[in-house]
Length: 68
Image (cartoon, rainbow, N blue to C red):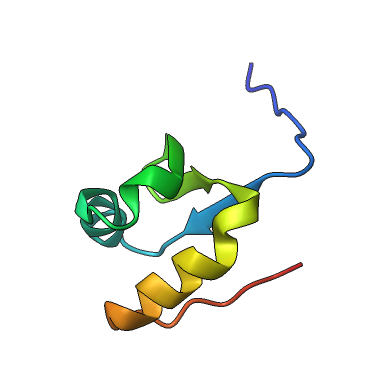
């Protein structure tokens, strides 16, 4: 049986292609902000660092959308 967990105060990066997440994880500028990989397409991010993460993703050519 699949059980879901609900967390509050968590930021996530979710991508359509797992290879993009692998690229993000290998970026040394992003590594300090990243937490656990939750699935092939999702990784936790330090919530207080989301603006730094968004800027870095933009610099890498990604177009992140932030949902609050």
